[in-house]
Amino acid sequence: MSRFDLIIFDCDGVLVDSERIANQIFCTMLNDIGVPVTLDIMFERFVGLSMNQCVDLITRMRGAPPPESFVPRLQERTAEALKQHVKPIPGVPETLNALSLPYCVASSGDHEKIRLTLGATGLLPNFENKIFSVVDVDRPKPAPDVFLHAAKHFGAEPARCAVVEDTPTGVMAAVAAGMHAFGFSANTPAHRLEEAGAHQVFSEMRRLPELLQ
Image (cartoon, rainbow, N blue to C red; front, side, top):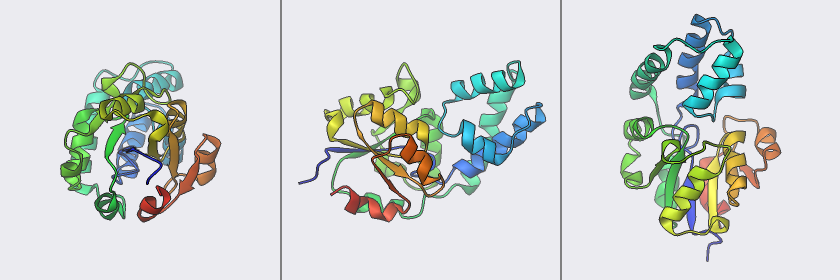
């Protein structure tokens, strides 16, 4: 018997290898509007945030909101790049096929972006009717809302849910939900996930089925 009844995956950086693609575009566009950031700063400060949280952060860093055209243009350029270049995180297709437990995705992205990246990587059929977004709830991560929303949909007790997250923000949300947080450290320093409260940290997705036992 497994100790879990539901596996909740984050999307970007966990299921799809999209973070570097999206953040390179984001980084370039921020520099274009006078916010001097590097890709390292993007991963340190922006990854794991909702778009509204990103806009708030840009406003603080810039001393003024970004231009009205900034977010629509960012979403347009990012979507085009992801359609062309995004791939599944190595080991994800095999891991999903090996799971005997119910699973879903709960992301800080909106439904359109989640479906775009899952569709472009061929993973979307695995997640039909199992997609939960920050836009479905009142508060974004690190609040636990989106994870609790997913658990309620499946009738799963939070303590019987496992969350797979690659950002400190996401790990904190999982811990706040009372769920078991697996920190995926393929692209994030393991110590940052541990400091955020991850119960276990791993770097190869193929290991997940054994860790769930």
